[in-house]
Image (cartoon, rainbow, N blue to C red; front, top):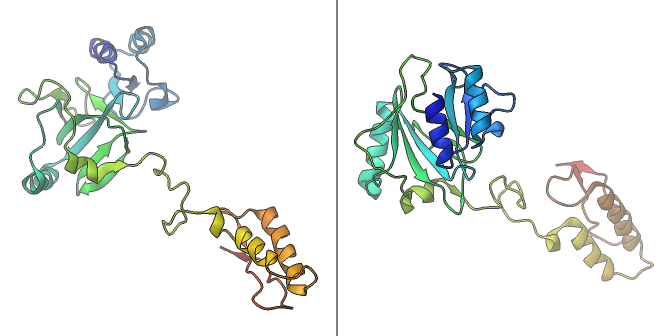
Length: 246
């Protein structure tokens, strides 16, 4: 195991140990402990030579992995290839029930997903990891490199990337409403209230009501995710409504 771990690290893959015959990390921080440092790798496997070898996927190692788990998943993958084109020859590992297909990481973000591409086909990208040969599956079957695949890690085809890529900056929905529309300061409650306030005489009661609402908006915030929102007065002389939960 240690020789394989050191060899992967020399190729730039971030390595960490998993428990023997298991997928559970053997370090306190799991994949966050992944490294290419040979001294650290030697220390881990000298402590327990039977540790499985895990590779952190995503930008840290420059790869992502397509995990086709089982015959049904293989059938789904064949359907996709028939529709869009055959996957390029690349490095593949044989697993207990299927295979891991390795591809180069892209400029866009590729994240973990389960059955997003097709049923039974998972993606291991940013924040994920896979066991690499000669690790031992919990069933007792060893992982091994395929002998009839490519000799280098290939770039993924455009059709596959279109199904799995997440544009950078949008992976967690930041900057968007829950509905998916991008949030704009110009459309915020505070901006609308300010515009209405400027259109009213300073002495009218509606202006006073809006000032009260603005004060409350400042307290709770107006960006998506703020705990409360306030409706604007709709007619002169009306009072600000009480806060309502989102």
